[in-house]
Length: 622
Image 1 (cartoon, rainbow, N blue to C red):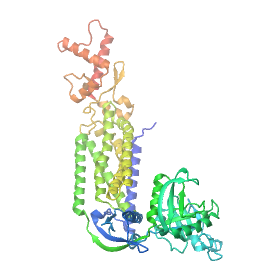
Image 2 (cartoon, one colour; image 1 turned 90 degrees about the horizontal axis):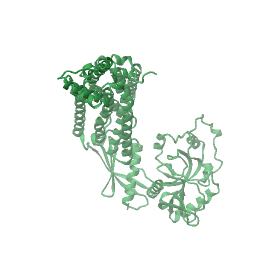
Image 3 (cartoon, rainbow, N blue to C red; image 1 turned 45 degrees about the vertical axis):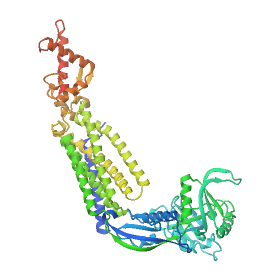
Image 4 (cartoon, rainbow, N blue to C red; image 1 turned 90 degrees about the vertical axis):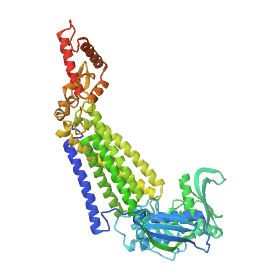
């Protein structure tokens, strides 16, 4: 069977890594030439500065009072809109319990301003066509004459005469599985016109009629256990709606009409629309006359609570007036960025010094691997800044600095595994191969924990903390790529060189300095390190050149390496330890001269004793 860490395979892996780097560099270079990409990462508000807008919430209907809960919901709506538009690292807070302060890096576009100021009005529209999980059409668009043609003026919100050829074409071409489509559907259609809308949770695609019940007619929304006809609990979560007087009348008319279409028909559904997207499209299964509706389905407690809050606060048609807008300087600025970079350089230098002190020439592999991981991470951040408008904050820089130690830890685990194999008496080629098989499991487990922590932190945190989590997760992925595609292949190739393969004292892989001990075979025999692998490469390496003098017992005055002597003594079998003690007694009894056998022993016994002593010498030398 071919060795997994063979030289040709290692070279191919390094070539593929070079191809990855070349592809990333070409992508970024092409983006900088023909688009707005840049070779430098985009910086967040705390490092670059940007625009600060103070918004005053405005409630339609003349009511100037707004509660803190409604203001908090408004902040969440704005945050979702800003994040959806691709602006990252924005800061959105409240001021004096009345205003909303939005701070964006750079200069916001006109589209971003419009999204921030837009009303958060909720609408109830009847479903005319479509349903959940609608895939985009892939055929050639149907000719106009084959499309639905209105035959009369629409009579209600469920009338098929709302569907014009243009609207049907838009429905067919809309891809609700594309995130870009969901981001573009923030602005709702006019209240008296039909629209095409997506449901993000189910990738549903709908043609909806005009607004029949505005969200302002919804007085309250709550969640709880669903109730049956006799007031009994149905053991499932539900969302409860409570309409005002006018809303009760309108909802009664709608529910009576939708029931006539029968269960299973798209026109039996009633869509709840917020920010141009369908947040729920329940079917109508009972006539609702008192304005108290109940939405049931496969809800959990969390999803029922989330929908009820969207209905409760989204029903208030809040818009925002920009009271002031000004350019702000970086809240932390270039000084803090420079100090952060200095801290990163200091950390890198300390890791380099430790690696060189602990691993000698092998430490250069650690340093080079860190540089490769750094370049890979830098290219990824720059590309993400161009493609997804990702901006690097000071918290993100902190994540990169922390990642230096976490990345170096992977290399240390690998190197220590190799050195353990050398101590067991293996040659370097075999030690690299076997050590990698053991180390990669540890590295994968470690990086899995790092990624899990980063993902959890990213989703439960807000603001700059998410920037820290993002860079922490990104560097964990880069670390895995570098360890598998650079560090291990390089070690495979270095193991075949004379400097490392023969265990030069400055290589960090000197078997004698590591206290290598030949492996015991039993029956008083030891095998050479080269015999462990049966590999011709090992025969030319450190294992075949191990000094025979080091096989003497740990207490021998001829032992040159105290570390090797201690290691040899620690690894002795019971038979070897007894033989060493017997040799010491003979030496003491003969005045310092070791006799191979007492009178009366056979010549064969002398030969066995001498052979065992020679192998012990080789053991200590390794």
